[in-house]
Image (cartoon, rainbow, N blue to C red):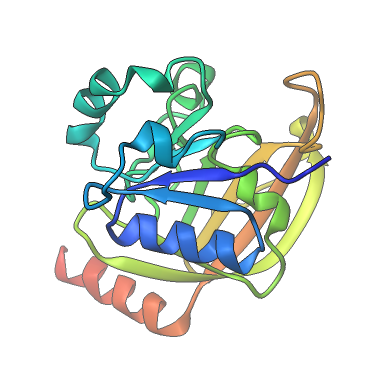
Length: 209
């Protein structure tokens, strides 16, 4: 089976990072942004999925103006879009932050979940030692390093709430190529904040007290 040609829309930081990552992975990629001389439906003909790296505010207007996207797989990346609650209604729109865990990019254990075939599809290619970056709502970017990956039953995830270093745990369904949705198995990626990021987070937490 041939690799899909990803279509990437946008020109900001998120689009730049997504494009760079896909190129490093050798993924076929077609790009479009507002500076292009041809319309997106022509530049991205045959591309799927379509990755929308545009702001939340521009999303509705863009989709309304581009009816050619109807029926295609479209994934939106805003750069900071993580929704509250890790339940089905939330995950239909984007990654969900597990209630009761630390906010991403802050001290403590932060747990984020998303579907394996959309926002967390990239986890299939993540390996121990890879870097992850979280952009908080205040614009501060926090670096993490993957320290562990594992497959576990949903009932036996055993994710600790108390951690020595700020930790980001990403959870999605497994296996990635499953035909049927759901199932009991989960793929878990654990990443710890770098030392400089940890110091910065602790300093920010202290200044807010």
